Image (cartoon, rainbow, N blue to C red):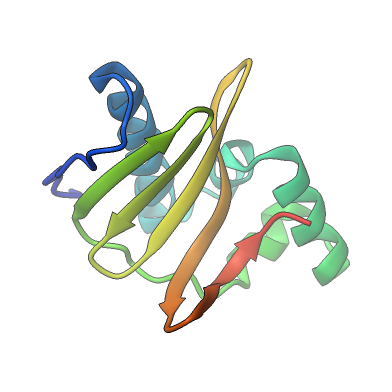
Length: 125
């Protein structure tokens, strides 16, 4: 089971928003751990799912299984900025955006790079 140790960033909004973001990332990581590809695809933002399918030329359920996503570990911090969020885990960083149906993953498998944007395995176009 994914351990949750949340440290809230000072620029966050309400604790309910952070809780919603954290819950979505935990669902995403559990689906990754158990190989539930349909759940992973449902968690992706529309543009992220579209980019994944276009770049791999296959349906999301097949394509997401071919990605090199790390087993993320515990949540270290959650930052929310309006309708955008970043969740830093032990071995991954996940970005999300808020849609009418809830929080969706816009990028995952992200690693920081000095003086440059994150390098992400899955990202929107």
